[in-house]
Length: 314
Image 1 (spheres, rainbow, N blue to C red):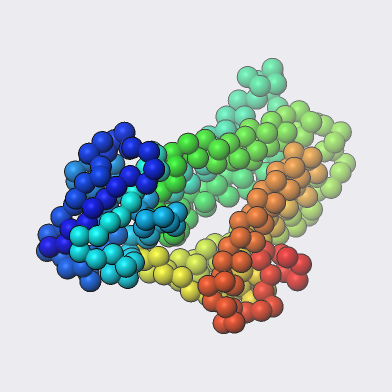
Image 2 (spheres, rainbow, N blue to C red; image 1 turned 30 degrees about the vertical axis):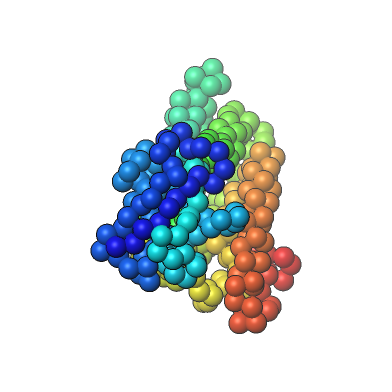
């Protein structure tokens, strides 16, 4: 049996008023006891303080110890000390993703099929509107599928309040704003913005759709590659190789941007271009940060010619 003393890292924790306290972990030795085992022991004594809310650290350190870290590797001996911080209510990444992508899947059909409640009368949909509606719905249905069956998350949870910030990006940007911009009378079959323009030309619409389809399929392929890098239940990291990864570290972000570019090009909508810029900018921030982490972790083994997200650029 292993014993450790756990104290609050800072102010007292309201849902774990009994801290500091000693926790016994039966059936374990110090060389095979992990931080995750300690979290389970804490949660057993304080049920509201579940493992995902806990950030375990060493004394005078702000760096969290991962669940897989063994106490002996962290320098903790039998009877040693650990410190814990309450991260607040948590929610799973999978749940957040499902909620994010569900928004546009609800918003677009409402505005597309019930225009009289938005614009005061029927809207005779143009070919362009029908194309955009189909592409948006397929895109977000694909994202829901990937969340359920493809993605393996490096972190189990995030702070609960993040769901509102993350969802707003999709519910408002690619949901409400895009639907309001595209499904109204300006883009209807009788609009001068549509009639006699490339936006009513099947060749142009199918050409944009071909770009979109290439991007979506490529995005799915790269997501599958990333899934296969990490065995189920593992946080293992490896250098991604294969389709899309020769030139950039995160081709999934690049292909996602390309798909939204195809929709912006198809519509000519400032709203669509605005969402493209915001979404691509955010994805580049993520890509640059993760790209730097790859280079730091793998050093000289990481391909030197790769950019973060945009081939040959950045």
